[in-house]
Image (cartoon, helix red, strand yellow):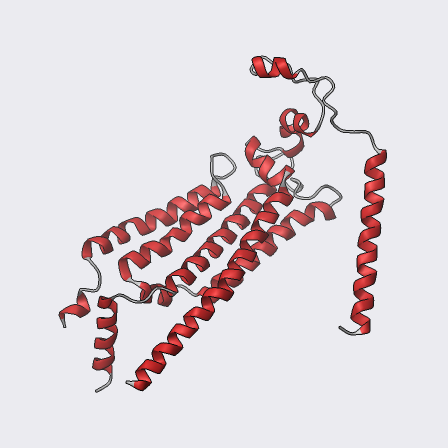
Length: 158
Length: 125
């Protein structure tokens, strides 16, 4: 019974709980402030995707599979790429160049911000999909196996 | 491959080749954008901060000198990455898609094989 509650070390789990929102918020900050500060879509997307590793460290591979949908992430990656190409192609259809600032010309906000957000979404989904794939090839450790078998034994008599 | 597909492929490739040849002829006939005739490399190397680059020609001087007029951007690096080199960023994104699709094919198969072997062991036991 005790092994059911002692899934992972509590220090690792509390540290993961502490740093998980920080990683997500800081990644979003880097993505949305890419036009004025160092960083941008690629770096911020990888920062957001590192939340998967924190979940894996704190709660194990089974919780990662239950929390994130790999198929959904892979399709949203394609959606983000289509968003980038469409936003960049509107410049050509208005008679200007590819990826040119067309709608908000003269204002402080520019169309590159939208392209930057699309790249951040794309990299976040792609790296998260890659991390889930890599973590799914790892074999579950002994604590997790014990818990899975204990859950199975408890569920069978009922 | 059927005859219709072959015909379609041949026609599309011929159109692409004709467009490429026409563009190459146009590019060869136009004036060169940068020949480096007025660039003093020795002065630029010895004292790069005081070098006068207002009369320089070529794409690099346009990017440096007329950046804010052309893009209305706040950051020069950001406008280079997403405005002047938008094709480059798009290619990087497609490379990421290709890499993840390749690893998806390889790693998904091994994961399925592992679960199948585990199920087989359970059945044997």
